[in-house]
Image 1 (tube, one colour):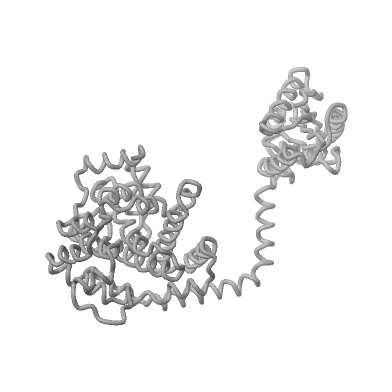
Image 2 (image 1 turned 90 degrees about the horizontal axis):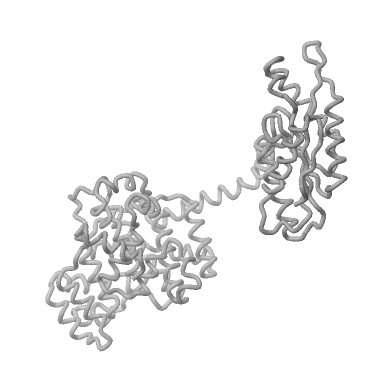
Length: 499
C-alpha cells in the first residue's frame, strides 16, 4: 500500500465510519472472487435474500441488458448477468444505505450524489458497449462507486467538511480542497474502500486516477488507462447533464475524440438514449430519480446553444481581435512615458533569452539600465507634475538615441531599460553614451523655467550560451554597473562584465 493509502486507511480507522456490506452482499463479493466460481452456488446464495433475488431478476430483465426473453428465475438471472454483473448488483443494492438521507451531512445533498452515480454507471456501460471495450461490468461498477467515498468523507469530516460542501458543483467536491482541509480526498478514500471490499486492484487504480487519467500513462496497463478514461468520460457526462452547460458537452466530445477517436455522432448516440436505462436502474436500486427534462432534450438544447455560439463567433472574431489587441496594449504600455512597461520587458526578454538558449540567434544581447540622477530632488523642489514631465522627456530622449533594432521600457519610477540585440563591448558602451548625451542636452520647460537632468547608465551583455541561467543575471550585472556609475559621480556610463 502506498504511503497516501496508508494515511487514508488510518484516517478511516480512527473515524470508525467505514461502511460495511450486508452479510449476503459481502458473501457475494467474496464468492465471485473465486476462480472456480459455481454460478449455481451464487444463485443459491442470492436466493437467501428475497429482496436481492427480486432485484437481480429485475436487473436481468431491464433495458440495461436488452434481453429477448423474460427471465423468471434467480438461477437464469445469474446465468444471464454473469458473476461481474451480479457483484455489481449486490454492491448497488447494499450501498444505498451507506448514507441515511435523514442524517445531518453538513449541507451535503445525498440525492445529488445518487443521481450522479446512476448517470455515471449507465454512461460507462453504454460507452463500453459502443466502443467495443471488454471491461463493461468493471466500468459500470467503477462509475457507480467512484464517488461513494464522498458521503463517507462527509461523515468522517463533519463540520470540517462544510467548507468543501459550500463549493460543490451539483454534489461533486473539489478533491484538491478536500486535501487541503482534511489531508485526504475522496479519490484517496475511494481506493481504500474498493480495496476493503476486495474489488480488483485495476479497478481501484482506475478509480483513483479517473480525474486525471494521464497520470497512469507509463505507469499502468493500456486497459487500466482506458478504464480510467471511460470513468472520466462518465464523470464529465454526469456533470454536463446536471449542470446543463453547453461547454461541458464540448469538453466531453473533445475528450472522446482525443482518447477514443470518436466524433460527435458517437457522443450523441451515447448520451441521447440514457433516459430509460437510468430511470429503470434507479427503480431497481430504490433510488428516487427526477430528471426534469429528458437527457435527449438537454442534449438538444446544448447543441443548439453551441451552434448559436459557433455562428456568432465568426461575426465577432474581428471585433474580438481588435479588443484583445487594445487590451494587450493597455496591459503592456506604461501610460506616463508611452514606453513598454515591466510586463512587456519581461515578455520580450524571455523570448530573446530562449531564442539564444535554443541557438536561434548567435548574436549577443546587450542591456542598458538608465536611471535619472537625483530625481527625488526634482519632485521635492518642483512637484510631481514636473517629475512626470521629466519622465516623459527622458523617455523621448532615450527613444531618439537608440537604434531602430533596440527597444525601450520604463522599468519603474525613474528607471528605464534598453534591450539592444547584437550590442556588446565597445558598441554597447557607445550606445550608452549616446543615451547619456541625448538626455543631458534635453531641455524641459517647467512653468517658464528651463530644467535639465542627467542620467547614469549601467551596461551588461550576454555573449555566451545562456543555458542554465536566468535573464535576471544580465539585469543584475547591469544594475551593479549602474550603482558604480552613481558612486563615481553620476552622469556617466559604466560597463558590467560580459555574461
